[in-house]
View 1: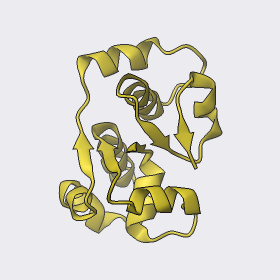
View 2 (view 1 turned 60 degrees about the horizontal axis):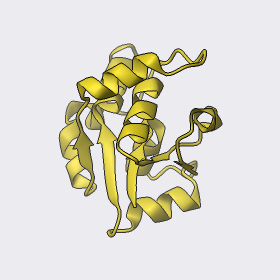
View 3 (view 1 turned 180 degrees about the horizontal axis):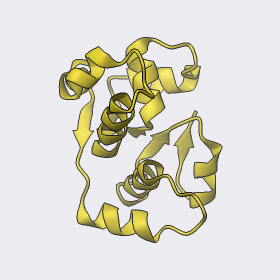
Length: 128
């Protein structure tokens, strides 16, 4: 499987947080799966950390690339196509980070690892 982690899924994985579902943990720890962390999540983490909304992630925020690689995951860049689809997605959901993750999951045929049920309305496949 090819997985795209929602920002909270990545942070919970790194922190060993129990809020990560058993299905998500199993899929993320399976070496046969490709696991991606979007540049959108990196942008979200650093922005929220700078604003004081993500206390306790200083070590991760200081070197997110090392945190991703250290877990055996891969970073995922944002393409022009991702940006176009993210902006064009219908519906009232305004969070630009979520819209980008949805666009990447749709275009790259990735399973989105997230606890957010609102993603289900966008025709992508979500694992939780």
